Length: 340
Image (tube, rainbow, N blue to C red; front, side):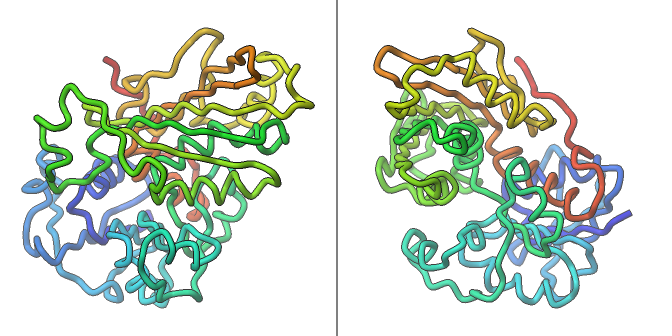
């Protein structure tokens, strides 16, 4: 058995880590930490988790007894504690944005704060693209929820130099805003509405650009929308085919995706005419990808659905943990979505 600890386990992602790790056959949760809720049983915050015996403790990161530590902390907080954790010999899966960027100057631009730990570099924790790097890493930077669905649904296109422009439109559930209520997530403000926000300046655009814009000549734009559902992100990617690829067929596009993702357990490609649905992936670590349609202007439409709290956060973090521990990547994550 491996020992794991969670720093900042009081939020939604912390609750999801607890839900899945408590059913994981190869790990034991040794500590869950929170300054605010020191001494509070886990079920007082996460009412769905009963009889776990876990209690929040205000414990120093350097005092944790764990093989892997999850840092489910706000942006800016992780970089202050990760170096101390690494010094203990534990491996870290960070769920914040602090270590996702190869260039810390990009982080500082989009997050508006100085990066204080430029020495430690994290492997970008998207297993379907960077499994070999993750296997060797002591620090894994879990991707953001929007980037996970957006990158996976477009990667085969940019890898094969088929497109020059990608416009990404994502619809997200309210849980993506976190556990603390706000005017934006207040029920009367979100119900019966589709609310675009940060329409050209969402920080996740820089993360998507890092992974897709790195291919020569590809330009990426991104706009998120808040919709009145609890969980899930549905992403529609509009990709403009290069002139030399304008005659490619949807069937040829599908074969590229099958070649890229055919051996990936958590990526499911939809049948012709089948659309990914949020309820099909709710509560699961699966990514459903569909669309594969091209209009007369050469616009290729791809769609993906993920659960923002699972494949978009905690489930993917556990997938990364499994990889760095050298155990079966799917352990604790094989449950299907909750539909209806």
